Length: 167
Image (cartoon, rainbow, N blue to C red):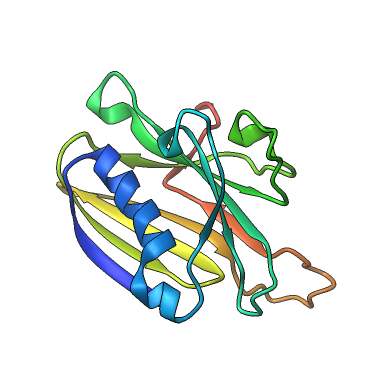
């Protein structure tokens, strides 16, 4: 298990720090638990990236897609999170991969914010503090109260909100 915290200058810095932590953190590397970049959008990581976690056995394929969405106003910046069952190298967007989950969102600020990241080979969680508001996300496997044959892919993708319109 690896952990880090710090302060990001803005939403773009936060996203970059998260990807760097997941793919290059020395604690994750020493545990053979770093997440591997397996697909990147043609416009770069911020437009979409898919990471693969290898799980506790080292043989799992835990696919998580992340995209940084930057809006015109300070309150419209967020990370979009997706789980998926497979990766297509021909995909032009995250949504074109295999078995993509609905989108979860973690809202970010355009200004400075404190952050906390934790990860292992099965999952990662992250949080941001903007003034009196905390936003958080979770992606990867969890331990269900069920037999493996009843729950073969125990993946959870969660954020502070969903992409569903307000009803």
